[in-house]
Amino acid sequence: MIDRFDDENTAFFSDSDTLPNEQLRADIIKVSAKSRSTAVAGAIAAVIREHRYAEVQAIGAGAVNQAVKALAIARGYLTGDEIDIVCTPYFTEVDIEGQERTAVRFIVEPRTPNQ
View 1 (cartoon, rainbow, N blue to C red):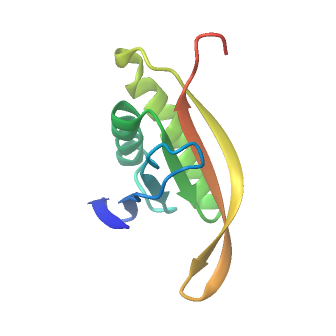
View 2 (tube, one colour):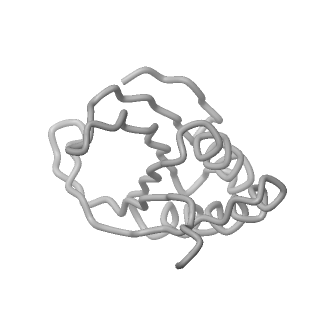
């Protein structure tokens, strides 16, 4: 992973792994409880504009709270581009310094017209 953005407690990473459908995997936006929701929202909006797909990851209640606020703000940022987004949450296990932790991840995609 390559660190492309760092807003003190928000990390914006790029990963070149491919998804099963052979699409380039979009960036993972990692959120902490101290992340500024507006900064995270700007990162989400930028990734959606560029890749039409993003993932947001948070560990802990405070981080999930900031992530959800950022998703709502990003939706507003994207209205000028006529992009409406939908988010699909799921749990995933991540390894942090040798310890396995449960993270909440949100898949963020543009809403299709019939949704």
